[in-house]
Image (cartoon, rainbow, N blue to C red; front, side, top):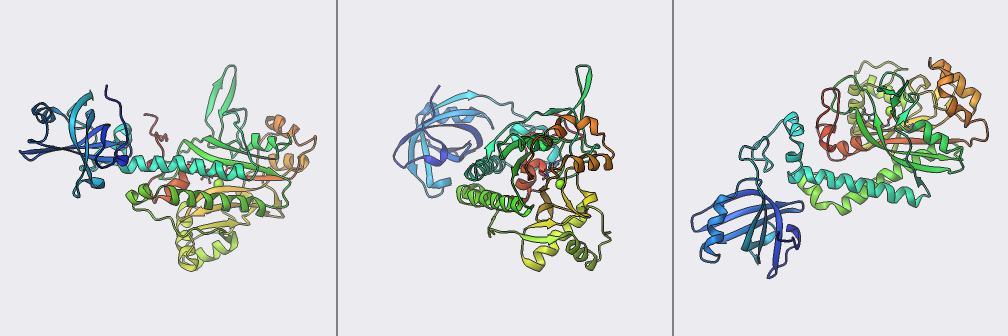
Amino acid sequence: MLKRTCYSDNMKDGKEVVLTGWVHERRDLGGIKFILLRDREGIAQITAPKKKVSEEIFKSMDSLGREWIIAVKGDVKSSPQAPGGLEVIPTEIEVISMAEPSLPLDPSEKVDADIDTRLDNRFLDIRKPRVTAIFKIRSDVLTAAREYLLSQAFVEIQTPKISASGTEGGTELFPISYFEREAFLAQSPQLYKQIMMATGMDRVFEIAHYFRAEESNTRRHLSESDAIDIEMAFIENEEEIMYILENLVSHILKYVSENRKKELDLLGVDISPLPKSFRRVTYDQAISFLQEAGFNVRHGEDLGTESEKALGNIVKEKYGDDLYFLTKYPLSTKPFYTNFDGNVARAFDLDYKGVEISSGGQRIHNVDILKTKIKEKGLSVSSFEAYLKTFRFGMPPHGGFGLGIDRLIMQMLNLENIREGVLFPHDRRRLEP
Ligand code: 4AD
Ligand code: MG
């Protein structure tokens, strides 16, 4: 097999190269034949003028089908009309793998496909340069997140994904049979990352996998999703957590905008301006904004999808901000571990263009108060024994957040559906691929 010498975006005029990739398109103008060859970095034009290539090569180009994998050896020449201003005059073409002629999805995007067809044929869908771009950006989101958190003395950890109890409320739990007992897939690393605060490792983060049995089929919920979870100790209030979160998100956006210009252009996305500090909107303010705009929202309830979206538009109009914190929620809307001042939760959400991308706050670190709150939520104290024990032998004040990676990518890239930014999204209806 011919060995690739470079990707399509790294060719130099006058050099001999070997490219490997997929047949994106074929054109035959009689005296000259073209192949558009696609690899992960772009598309290269293979140009075969009858007079300049061997008869064998000229003929063999007719037999190639769409999406066949080939290796092409040839000479790079400048050509103003070709993508990237370069073309390859082939001296050798090797077929590496053939594709059946009737494709269930067209990776060259000449034919549109709905989201279900795309996901049913995800391996073909990801061949589209715009879809590949999303996953290159996603990789950079994680690189940037690690870079920032490590710079702030956070230590990366991994915690179990099978757990004995739920953490974020009971209804979204996936029960599994665990030998003779019932267990659950982890909704978040919440309890484990808090336990870590009792170990002395006072700043930790996890790129975590969440499992949630979301009943309804929405454009922003999945059964499995990923998040950047952090927990940090010796804090005085939730503002210290918000400071880390806004700097983390700013760093991610800056990193992506600097390193992925080509991909952002392909997606038609501009992620500037990049604010360093995000606006704070209190829950009370949010409710008044919505009521003024004629929305039927009641004080004391969590914001629904529609009000969240409307609030996004209002904040954008009033202040020009895409990213803003919602603070001072009523305690009743937040999970049992949330610290509080009276009826107000010491917790926040971060919204991006009208969609919640993160929740966090300061936690309760007094074991007696924690037990009371567990009971008040109708949960059983006995199922949290292993967690509660760690609060009895020296637990510092602490807090943290979970930042949904899939949501962040959806909002950053203006994707219509969260599924577009996830390789193999699973939801109530979809378990395959
Ligand atoms: O708001 P959530 O449920 O908060 C927690 O899990 C807390 N333990 C976080 C903390 O440290 N206090 O989830 C955090 C984020 C959400 O804001 C959302 O971005 C994402 O995780 N998320 C989901 N994304 C897609 N599909 C789902 N079903 C999601 N559930 C949560
Ligand atoms: Mg939340």
